[in-house]
Image (cartoon, rainbow, N blue to C red; front, side, top):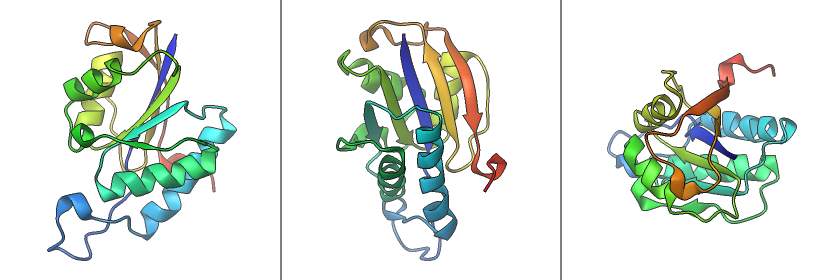
Length: 164
């Protein structure tokens, strides 16, 4: 059994419209929400064994704040293919990782993440910024992960639904 945590990056800033999409930073709400999600992960005893994130600045900053607050001790792995990735790309990237990791978190972007949840669980969910989805996968090896896997959507947390 494998666990996949799917996290959309926290709210980014549009204060500088000329900045490249890839380089947009977190805004104040994003800077506040990301640590809250990290605290939630720790409280739920879901600290991942591995965190993979898009190379976009907003995803990297989200992953770093979440990692710090959930007690993740390893380095967050930046994966260029996850920037604005489709569900298929997420599946391919995850299938490449070894079996030493039972609980993996991906940090990325919509619409790919919403499509990933739907592909794995058959359920469409909306993922606002900093939303976290917990999916249980009935596989023993990450290489088994593909569109045919029937995952279970365990829980979804959205920052606005969390108590302060």
